[in-house]
Image (cartoon, rainbow, N blue to C red; front, top):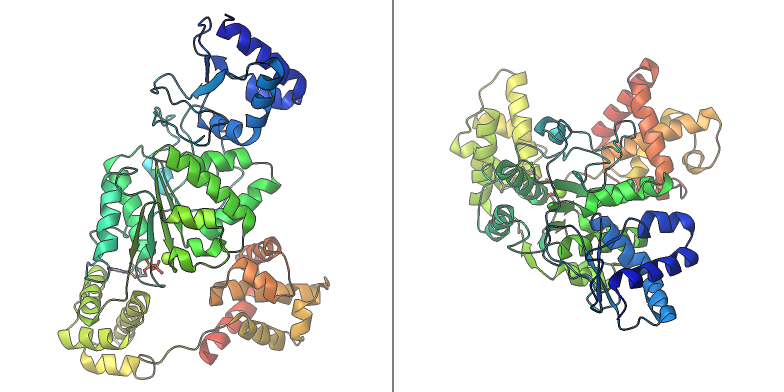
Length: 488
Ligand code: ADP
Ligand code: MG
């Protein structure tokens, strides 16, 4: 019988002749045979790391199959082993369950100084080219794009007030944080806006890091996942992108409903999910909709969202709102009388963000007028506000205000005209739309005559930068902001 060494050499030369040289060098050359001279019909190849596994799985299985067919090695079973410590994490390239892979040590000692806690928590979730190190296969993975998790320290379980509406979601998050990858995978949390989903995600991340400071925790909103992906596609950095998202102990994707309609993002996320899931790494997802109700999302993804556990968060009742309010007041260092917190909690009932907003408002009001936080003050502060739904500021409102301010037509703002007299107000309008309406970059692009969302991002950044220097611009922007706030 031919030795595995001979078989591998002939498959390798076949691949060398059938693949582009660079692909061959990048993907096939680094593979090495596990036991060179054995004579079984199983060939085990060692991979430098899991990225290779994913790449081979996605791109090269047909080539391996063709090589085996051409050389008459159909009965040879090619398997992979990711590193020496792993317990035969073998995958059959052409098997139906190609993703079965055993756990293995993905995160050996981290390089000194790179991943200390301070860096980990630096809050800058932007992709920053200048600070990107080149990822070294096999060494500390991830965080090659934005290298900090961006977790809010104050979003902890201790600061999360439990009630009947959220206790299930909270309990599942806690067990996931205590046993990442083992308890429920994925954990899918859904509930409408302002009910604490993001808070819980951060709490998971904070607790995981508290228990193991070397754990790689990645938090990203699905919108930023998409933005980073597009950036990386354009700048040939998909390798780094995949390093970041496919090699973490805990990946948390916030507001996943945003990827409805985004085919390429869904595709990328699907593979990210598979890699992490196969490696038994924890995935936590939030959404404002139940998986079945997210429109325009691929079934295979919807399906996977339901593999683990789904927990919902409902709006809190009035007692729960009072408890949350008191906790937030305590954090602010103020004491609320019972009648005051009851009054606020009864009126700010839509969600907890509104509740917090009300608290900050009355706090600010009492400081401003140097008055005690009494019921009278509460009545005065909220006489026109609480209970009435605030009118929502829309992109159209912003466009109208900016067009009036600069004496243009709304159509000018939506046009493609590049003269400064039009382009500059347009940039201001995009900036204000993003800042004041919460609309996403793609939505804003749509409202401005179908502009690409990267154009919007670029314009918004430009204004952000100029605001630091340009006092004239600052005056325009501030006046517009005041005007928009007052009219709504
Ligand atoms: P979502 O992501 O669901 O829209 P967030 O997590 O952003 O909501 O929550 C909005 C605000 O309400 C945050 O400041 C969060 O700290 C607070 N919050 C929500 N639920 C609770 C809770 N049970 N206890 C304390 N604070 C809460
Ligand atoms: Mg959120």
